[in-house]
Image (cartoon, rainbow, N blue to C red; front, side):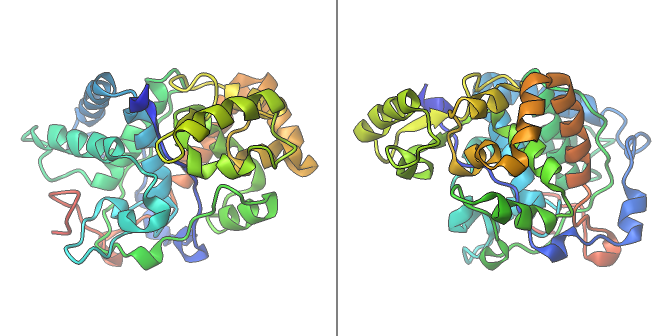
Length: 319
């Protein structure tokens, strides 16, 4: 099961990333590529399906990649950029938990899209990332939703631009970061439900074992056995159905089995407990609110040609 190891996913941002010009708002819409690349969504769907067949890590890794991208400088695929001097987002320590499989999902989908002569070099990497995130959810059993399209790719990626919350964040700290994205506490909680997929490495939660009274004792014992024998390479699933998109994550929080401190605090803190209880008992509500929050997240910091955006020919390098 080592192939299922997946590092921490957290979504956060700086306030400036949430600002988007009215022109960028207007350009986003489902069907943006209907006359440019009519088979776009089918191509991405098929490509993601192939990636998921090759590795079960692909879906959670691609979903987290979308969050990490939008949380830093907006949804502009800047997380994909590789700078020759090593100064880029993905090499910031806070992004080292991102798995190669997530990046490969996007590169595979981009190659598939560009193999269609009608679509070649006409679809942004940022839009492919948004579609791949949707497919990762849907093909894992989660809700289908229309994806707003029309993003342009950013040209800049730096280590210093990465500001992300950590696994030990309190509710106040989480709210502070997500408010920078223009997202409410309820939207932060429902997006945290993305942790229904994947796993986290021991360094992200080992400090809680035996010291955090909010962690279920039997769960702590199980984690201790895992991490004691494999302190650097050990991992644990973020919920008990790690390849299925469902509301198990919230039910786990109710029983003290949240893996990350920043997840368990959503139940421990009485200010957010009611929302956790709501989603734990109503998967339909979780799905509906997750779709709405994902759509809102996908509008953060969208680029246009007027604001330096482009359509990258290779997602790893500015044109």
